Structure formats: structure tokens, C-alpha cells
Length: 373
Image: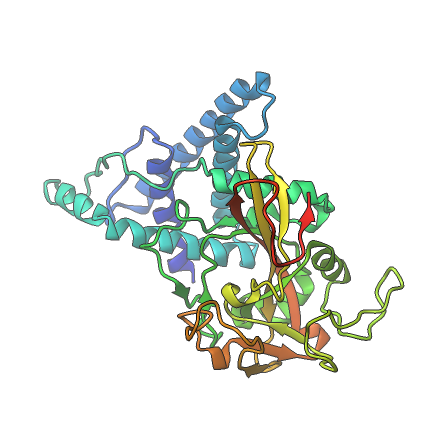
């Protein structure tokens, strides 16, 4: 693992150097450890100087959604992410960061960046640094992320439930079509993770003791549960799933939602967000953005970590597919698209996923219930 972290650390440093256009030369792969350490130290110093300069520029900026503010927030997160690799303490954060760095490296290779580096390296003498040309990476200025953040702020949830260091945007800009649709992060987990394309995931805090005891980040499967904002917050506060018949904190008794299968005292998830986000599960909400003054419909889906062998894999229980004679998801067959469990401690929530769709007017009529924000 130490060798892998060393490699990821170097790769991530090269990505940050290109992304933030630092005035640095990137050592080649066979440079000495001392050379790399000098490079990493200088990179961190330049990042901090750039952050200080942006903070100074933002002293007179009142718009929290301005491009400079978003750019500064991304830079700050990149610095914090690199520090996570240095400290090597948060296993969950490191695992997700490794996944992100490897995906970006794969994307860069597909863009022939590796070919550019090879051609430069071939003209260099051994152990000489390679001067990399500026690389066009994903822009840190993501308007979709800003819109989703505005919606989440409008929900007025307690800030204590969020873990912003695990936020991840999967829009077409931040997660291009050239990136994989499925990833298998851990060999101990037999269920692959299906990427929630065109969604924004906000990290949620989870219990550290529980994750260590059950090795959740290594062994538990990723799934999705569509719901409404009020129910999502209730589940997050309870720190576990609730089943029909349970009495909640506010004294209400949980019942089966209208239109769902009666007498099914179970909790349902799906390995694909496309199924979990169906209208039957995730009710649309509508809000008007103050950023661009447009009206959007949004859906809320909880991302889950689910204990293997604690659920039953079954077919879809909706009577209609997204399109006639087609599957809900082209990555998972309909007869394996739903997971059912009645074990309360077997599911935790580590992400709040948001999807936005622009509508033309306030007067649009929706077939599903619409809540205004």
C-alpha cells in the first residue's frame, strides 16, 4: 500500500501542478526520492501562495457563487486532499482520492497526454526533469455544482450532517463521457460501483467506529435509495434505516408510502441511481435558482453503503420501464436491479445525490407530486 500511495502522491502532484498552472517542472519517473520531495514541497508552497492571493481578492467579493469564489473553494479542497495523502489517517478519504486520481490519470492518457510526456522524455537525458506543457483538465468552475449546492442550502439541513471533503460532481464537465461507467475499487467487494452520471454527490458524515469495525470502505457495496428531502433527513438523523411500523424520533409511526407494495416491511435500494430515481421512489421538487433565475426540477437520492449478503437481489417491482421494452439501466439487468433488506444495521448513508433539470416556466405541470423551494 505504501508503494501505491507514493505513486498516487506523485501522480496527484503532477495533476495539481497542471490544473493550477504552477510554475514548476515535474520530475520524471526515475528521479530520486529527494528530487521528488523538493518538487512536492515547492508545489505545496505555490498552492498556498495562490490560495492566499485569492483570499485577498475575495475580501471585496460578496457573491458566494462567483467564479473566483468557486475556484478558491476548489483550490482549498485540492490542498486539503493532498494533505490527506501526507497524513495517511483517513482510510475512507484516501480510498476515494486514489479512485479520483486514477480516473483522472486514465482520462489524461486517453487524451494522449502520456504521448506528449513520452516524446518530451525521449529528448531528455536520464534523470533530467521534464518540463510539461500546460494540460487542459476539467475546469474547477462547475456551474452545475453551484446550482446543486444552492438547492441543498435551500433545504436548510443541519451543516453537521455534511462532509464536504467527500463532495463529487459527476456532470459531463467534471466526469467526461470518456471516463468509465463502472468502477471496482476494492477486490473485497464483489459488487461494482455504478457511476451516477449527471448527478452531484454531497458527502455525509458517517460513524468512524462502525466503518472500522465492519471495514465498510473495503467490503460494503454501493447502492442508492430514492426518497423525498424530509424522509432523507429523517433517515440520516436516525443513523440507520427505518422499517414500516417503526416509531420515529418525532413520535410518528412509519408507514408504507401510497403506491408501494403493501405488507412489505423492508428497505429497498438499487445498485443503479437510474432505478432509484424513478418517480415512484424519488419525488421531484421544484426551485428557482438565484444564480441564473431559472426554474429547475430536482430529485434527491441517498447513496448507501450496504453490507454484502445482507440483502436479497430481485427484479424490478415497477410495472413500466423508462422506455417501452427497454431496461431501466443498460448496466444492470431488470431482474437484478432491486435490493431488499430488513436488517436495520446493514445500510449506512454516505452521500446525498442531487439531479437538476431545467424547466421553461413556473406553470409546468408534473405527473408526480412537486414541492417548491
